[in-house]
Structures are given as structure tokens and as C-alpha cells.
Picture 1: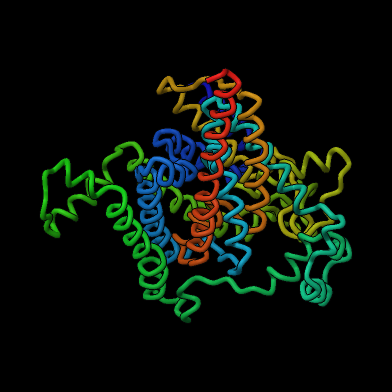
Picture 2 (picture 1 turned 90 degrees about the vertical axis):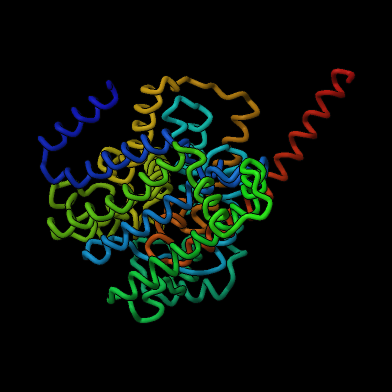
Length: 460
């Protein structure tokens, strides 16, 4: 209750300063709701892939697919109503590579981008280290320059040099800027409906984006999860030796509701994510803006804006970019210039954390998880060991690097994309699963080796 009252008091204070802070508060309160649901269902994509490969339990993966289906349906309504804030990601090989690095990292941290936030809200200091590592690794990756710049393909350098870039940016002095301007900007991103020239039609939105890109793959994945992970045990429990089609459908349903909390969290997250996009889109229309930076300028807050007077403002559920801004902002205060990069200087800015709307969404997730954990008496301060702290920092660093290469994490590059008709999200999931599979094998090998070492030291 104390956390909830703190958010209420802070919201009233912000609105008293300027009613236009309502736009920022939307992120806060949706973040709070995301945190409540994530903690309630212990909803984590790292757990989903780890459980599949390590213990062959599909519970979390099923909940994830339920959330995707529900978000896709709500996103359809939002798009048809004209309030969608979604923009497709660029499709390319970088998604698979970045997602694989990200997937490998989540195994060692024990949490994905969203999972680390809600676990931090439970008092898990290990997850807090993950958040710190994600924040600074991204900020360093997008601004660093060194000998590795010479490894960038000449074609990227030529393409970046051919673009008319603002003088404030040092595009040719960092590999990530060259990667962005010379490779990413030359790629095309589109929804399935856009690819078929049907983006403005209800048929394209419903059939191509929702049914073909989201619902059909979800159905296929659920059937695969049932066949490979759930069916054998279900038939043994029901005593069916020659199951009919009806029995198989009943089995899939039983799999979907086998974990009530996870299923309910998936339903809630799917609906909530769609509503978030609707509310943000409606507020943009109300204030006649495209980006929160315009509101900040109108309110007299210009420090930390990009050279386009913009800040990172996705308009829907997103995680890692605002965390990169936290790391970049701290580096900026320490005298390390980050605003001469494309990522911060041209696109996302480095606003004060007190004016960072998506940043407050991440804080809201932590606070919402705290509210639910305290209500369920599951909050407990958990200090990491030296070993788990090391894994948290290394895994979080890999997650940050992977997220920047893939241009998003398990939320922004997967969950928010496939549900809005962008097939690049499935490419991200494919890469993340590959990385997580390798990560599970590597982690299992390490644990076996470590157990054998300790046994040898004890003379066993």
C-alpha cells in the first residue's frame, strides 16, 4: 500500500506542475500494472526457454503465446481505430545475431529484460545488477570507438558517408554509428499488410497482420508445445490410448490452463499492452504531437533532447532503450560525451531520468512487482553470491549488446512486433531460442564441471 500511495502522491504532484505530465504518467501507471501482472504470473521469457530445454516444462512458453495472441487481437482494434503508435523494425541478419547473444545472456542472469525488472521489485539484488549491466553495456556499445572500428565493412562506411548527417554527430568515429547509418538505415521494415500493399485496409490489418503474422504462428507453436512437451503426460493421466481429435483439443486446452497464474498473467499482459498503445495514441492526437519531446519543449524542458528535439517515446511496451538512456545520462554527467552519437544525439536523446517517460515505465514495473510481492508476502531482499553476481554482470552485458545489435529485446523486438504484424519478431524469437539453447548447454556443462571440481576438492 505504501508503494501505491507513493505513486499516487507523485502523480498528483506532477499534474500540479503541469497537466501535460499526464502523458508521462500513462507510462508510469501502465508500468505499474505490467509489474503487478509479471510478478503475479512470474512471467519471464528467460524462464520459458530455460524450462523448455532444461526441464522440458512448457508452462511459461504457453503463457507467453497466450499473451501474444491477446495483444495481437487488441492491437487490431487499436490499429483499426487509428491510434496505433507501432513502427516496424528493420529486417536483417543483425536480428538473429543480436537475439542469439541476448538469448545466451538471459540464461546466465536467470531473467529476460522484463523478468529482471519484476524480480528486482521482489528484492532480488542479482536482478538489479543485471539492470545496471544492461544499462551501461548499451550506452557504451552505442558510443564507443576504437581499433574495432577498422573491422566495419567498407560498404557500410561508404553508405554512411553518403548520407547527409548533422554536423553535431561524429558518424565516422564509432562502429555502431556506421552500423546504424550504413547498414540499418538501408534495410526495410514493414508489417505483413504493408508488404502486400494492404496496410490501409481492414482486410490487411485483420487477416495479414493479426491472423497470418500473429495468431497462426501462435497456434502452430502451441500445437508443437503440446505434441513435444505435454501430450505424453496428458494421455497418461487421462488414460487415453487412442485419442480422438476432440481429446487432443482438450489436451491443448488443459495445457493452456495448467498454470492458472501464468495463463491469467498472459491474458492480462496481452490486453494491457494493447490498451497502452491505444491510450498513448489517443493522447498524441489530443496534444497534436508525434513525440514526447514536443511536449517537453512546450513545457520548457529542452536539456537532454536530441538535435531533432525528440526523446525515446515508443508509445507502447518497451524495455531496453530507456535503460540505455539511464547509463548514457550518468556517463554524460561524468563528462563522457554521448550526445554526438546517432543513438542518443539524433534519435533518443538523454533526458533527465525525472523526465524520461519510458524510463518511468521500467521503474513502474519494479514498483508494481513490489506491490504484488509485498501483498503475497513474497518480497525478500536477496543478496547475490560472488558467483551469481559475476553471472549477472556478464549475462546482463551480453543482453545489452544483443539488444542493441537486434535493435530491441524480448519485448520491443519480439512481443511488440509480431503482435502488430511485423514478422521480424519471429526472427528475433528464433535467434533468442538458439542462443538460449546454447546457453543452457553451456550453463549445464559449467555446473557439472563445478560440482565435479568441488567434489574433487572434498576428496569425494
